[in-house]
Image 1 (cartoon, helix red, strand yellow):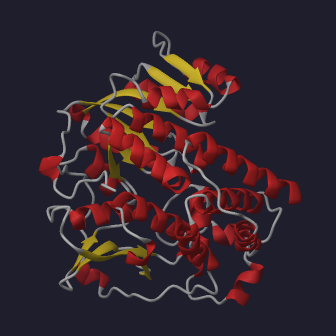
Image 2 (tube, one colour):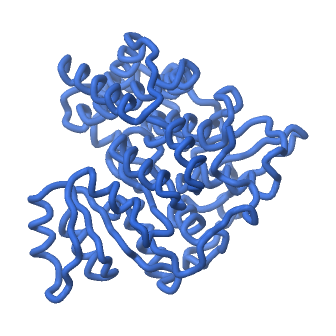
Length: 400
């Protein structure tokens, strides 16, 4: 199936600047970084909509600065808090509930939708943007894990384009660019920092605390993504995302641990060449690349100093200590319904761990058990995908 990220920029029909922008998940770490890019280049964007979760105060501060016509927040209580926090004389339309995010994703005036809502909650808004033919700057990998086949089909029907914001997939995008869609690829290589527990054996992880798991050595991310990074599930989800984005089987995607987080990913071609993307571990780089594509814009950050770094190191992932990564490979190979179970089980398990109701090593155990008990299902439409997602979550929560 055709991919929806072009390998050559001249083939993309992109809108002129300023671009109408909807930011779904503006109060999270990616959303905050994205608005910093907008702040540095105000002439390139017209912020039309901002959608947050429960942080009404931060959303109000963002809205007061960028003055979008539309805001969205999760519930009525948050909406009331938001209204009270907005400056006088500014009265945007405030929408609530999950459907609000879908509405903002499909606004007629929006050229570009940044989808950065964490978890499966980002699936339907991303799908709404795809159906509306938008350019989607995608930072919600779970959208493709849950229903990559559905979103790809929607893009084919509408002409929507996905530009990848995740640093690894943005690196692949840049490594593929200019080589033509028919250029043979040997494999894609995703790099992983290894998280806070790199080098530890499985026995060492028996006593991991929540505070230790939330202490990532390189990246400043939200709690859920940080835990995923520590278990290597984040990389497993990225493997599935890469398969959907670039139309490759899972056997042509590899992972290497690179603790410095300087090389973000590599593309290996059939002639043996490997093209790597290097950069500081700062999400503003891939965000700006997508929002301003095909232009590159200054970001006022220090240059990468390779001499100061001295060396870059690499190692193979330890699948015994970090089985989540292996489970992700197996889930994608097993069929379209298995990644849905994988993601739902992971989200519930991580939530239980964040609430300190289970131990750290219970996370992969819960996911493995959920996959072992799953029989392949037909998930050809979003309703079926969401039903399986909900069923899996309910089953796990009932037993824990």
